Image 1 (cartoon, rainbow, N blue to C red):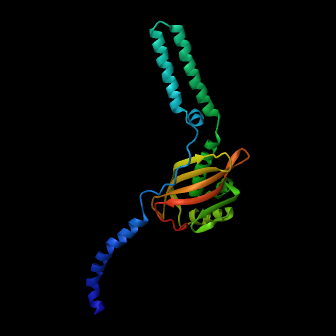
Image 2 (cartoon, rainbow, N blue to C red):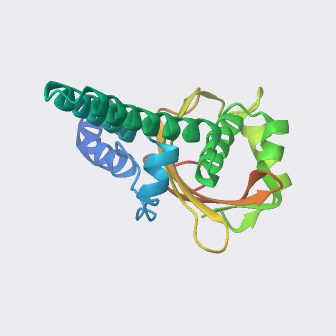
Image 3 (cartoon, helix red, strand yellow):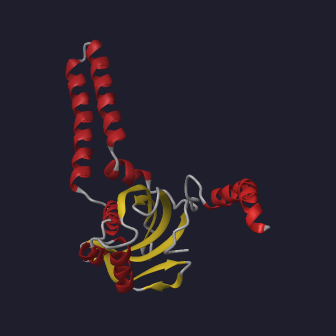
Length: 234
C-alpha cells in the first residue's frame, strides 16, 4: 500500500514542506551581519589633519586660490601672492605631516588588514607574528577562549591547503578603531569571505590590540555576528 502511494505522496509532501524549508533557510541567512554598537569616533583634529587630510588640503588650496584671485583683481598683487603662498604652505605642511607621521590608529588599522589577509590565506608564520603570546579567540563554541596555539592550529587545519574551508576571496569592509585612555586599542572589523565550501559570508569581529615595541599585536579576538551560520563557531 505504502509502496503504491509513495509516488503520489512524495510530490505532495515536497510541495507542502518547501515553504517551511525555505522560511527556515531564510531565517538562518541574511544579506548582512547584524552590526554592533559603533565605537566612539576619533578626534576630528587628528583624523582630518594627519590620518585623512585630503578634504582639508583641498579646502586650503581652494581658499588660497580664491584669496589670490580676489586680492589680485583689486590690484593688491603683492598681498595676493603672500596670502596665496601662506595657504599653499599650510596645505603642503599638512600633506608632509600625513606622509611622515603614522598615528597609533593607523598602525592598528594596518595590523587589522594584515590579520585578515594572513588568516584568509592561512599564512601561519605571519599570523603567529600578528598575535600576542597571550592572544585568545572567544566564540559561542569556545566561551573560555582558544589559546594562540589553538588558533594557529585551527586556521591551518580549516583554511590551509588541505583544509575543508579554504577561502578564495576576502575583504575588510569596515574597521572602527578606538583608543581609550587606558587598556588595549579596540577594533570592530566587518569582513567578507567566500570559499570552496561557503558562499559570501559577512561577519563582525571585535579585536583588542596592544603595543609591542614599535608595533602592535592582537591580544584578543571575539566573534560578534555573521549573515550565515559559521559551523566552526556556532
